[in-house]
Length: 495
Image 1 (cartoon, rainbow, N blue to C red):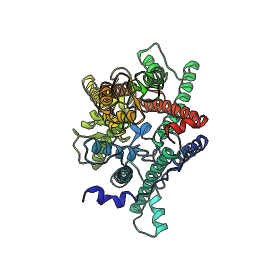
Image 2 (image 1 turned 90 degrees about the horizontal axis):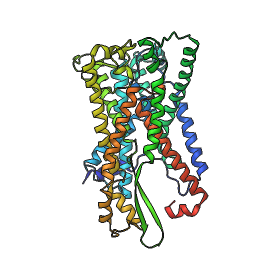
Image 3 (image 1 turned 30 degrees about the vertical axis):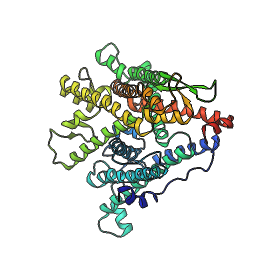
């Protein structure tokens, strides 16, 4: 008996959101999407009972990656979409190595795949929350008096362990909630919940960032900040810090580049085999796999840094391997070079800088900074290309799956025989190359945006994801409105 037969009773009974029986009206989809978005913002404001307020001790375990992992520090949604993304990485790797033996075209295997994904999400939620709560008090420090209050309430002598279990339960519930919120949006709303939560978090930080830009420039113009642009330190401050000039330019440039890249495509002409005059085009975009594989790359980096913090909290790890400060930032050892470059002060070693990151860069010197930037570039460019390939293959966007879709739709490529193998060979001329180039380009853009800085410190990856997901959401909304206005088109393409 294979693993599918053994696991089927469990995987097929995993709780799930029921799919709609028929077409969901566009207004109802917007209602579900808006309702989940409101619920998401509400849950991010609920602080986990028993933990200290943000800013009163400890740091954010996902501080550097919060813009792409969503959620909020020490809230019910503390883990954000981290467990979902990590589970996706595991499934991508297992599927890419063909170890699962699941056929996504088979309805039975689809149910098993979805059930397996939920089990992995629950496992990753536990594996992520346990070290935060039980092994490292610096990540989620207990609020003063909370354990005494809980000990008196439940009538136990050791309130510390009871408090930790309560914190763990709240974080675990948040992980389960965000899993089903994502599923509701995917089945009843517009787009995907993961994309929606990323847009929500990044947009919130962008708005806050633009308000900060206005406030700082008001102070510069009125002279209340004391910035002297005629000195090296003042000019550098105007570019990277209080002036936000480079961050503004980078933010606007990323918007323009992503929108332009979404429009760059190779269009393969198609014609209907039976209906004369019926023609179409299959677009192979420059960013064919979209920027979503970047979530997987950054999530892998986040898990590496989380492992480093766990080793650091044990106190027995050697300094050459791991060294973190009180805010959870790598300041030495191997994990310092594996940490992504998040802001200009991470690599600017000259001038009059302020802050821990700038101090580390100044102390390490140019050679170590170049090495760290080189590692980050290599990781993002290579990782972006590799995960883009996995993404294309596991989401049925590869040459073989695309050829089957074109064949099943009754279309063919003019000048070629109507055969799946022939169409697949044509697709192999474009899709693999464009996938690798697009994935590597997105990785390069993410690192460069981080190095130059962005408004609101949303990180380059977060900004890339937000612009790309928003653009695709706009296209999906336009398509939904078109289908709503012309029901016959909905019948042609399938409900």
